[in-house]
Length: 116
Length: 117
Image (cartoon, rainbow over all chains, first blue to last red; front, side, top):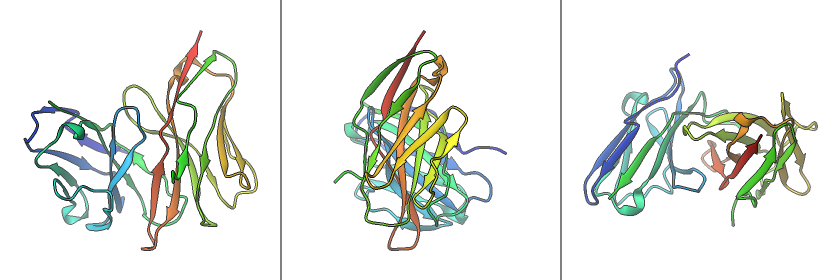
């Protein structure tokens, strides 16, 4: 079974530029998550999709971050314009369902973003 | 208030020794799930072990066991017979059901474990 795929693995941009990350979840997984992991910290949930609808985006800085999951499969996360404090690893995860408390999330390898 | 607290930024252990990584959590829900993940330097998050709030027995998976003390709201990970490959960041996480009916996974800040020969 193929895992969660993310690209690119690494990205370096200048502040005020824009950047986009792509995620392909495990086939058949209805729930997709984007997490931001700043160096030395735990992952913080940015947005959670159920199929192509958003169920939680309370921690997404909506003035600069946007995400979509068209057709309920692949997802893109965009930052425009980027700030220095956006430097982090962006992790995508998916799970078969988005309900219940025993729902294992499977993670991609992440995209490491450096804003200079 | 932090939902998941991991008070040990770093831990050192010698190969073949056992080590306990601490995790306390905060929730008013009766139903929740507790997870431990391992994150090696390569970056991927690897699921290790799960404990449900209604599970009466402590979870075990090979060399990993979870010391679940519900009244104290703690879910410590015990790794027995440490191996060099266990060196990594370890994250405790909790899944709770939101008002929407969907559940979300919240992570602690992690503990860096270093295993020495």
